[in-house]
Length: 250
Image 1 (cartoon, rainbow, N blue to C red):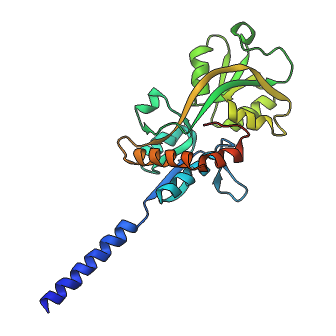
Image 2: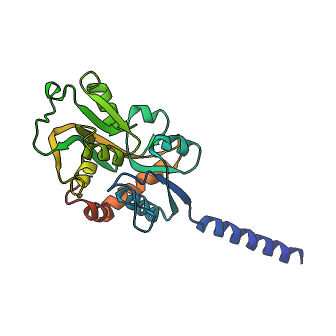
Image 3: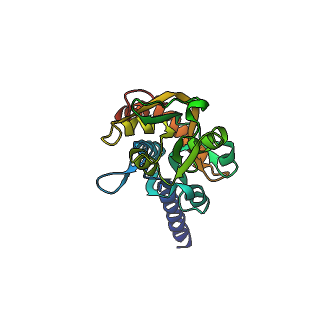
């Protein structure tokens, strides 16, 4: 009888271990939800966009259960470190300052910064032409930082909580131009609101590497890197890219 009980206990332990091993890893992804076409809230009220699609593809590759939640941009790194989610997939530029607070995966796309302003006009991107103009950008972004580092003594800089609010002030004439990620500007210029505007000059910064942020020392970083390599190799990344852009952003 004792041996029989031992066998039952061993079998139960094996089953419990097997169930635990088969249980999918649960990952919560944080994104902004206000940066189309990369992240947005879709018609059904759910987070969507390129970032979200990439995140879900990575989860599928890792066989993980994923939930996507939104966060205000200004507080998104503190929210990650407060464990409100496990990874930020929100078109976040990899910078030395941010690397002091979080770890980044390999870049999953590369962006550029470029000005937009009303079509025609005398808007040129040299310092002499920009002197005295009012330029908008989203707060706590590479665009905002670039303006502060390079144009603070030339232009009046207006920073906004969301990219959409920067565009609203551009259309209302409260700013003369906006500096933002080229691909975000490209999307907005296709909209009804953006029809009267255009790119100005060449990109002012063209090597903006975008990565996924995780908490310092989190092994999720390595898992995401392996999954990213896999979705690039098997064509999943290209399918998502082609859904949003007629050119490669990888």
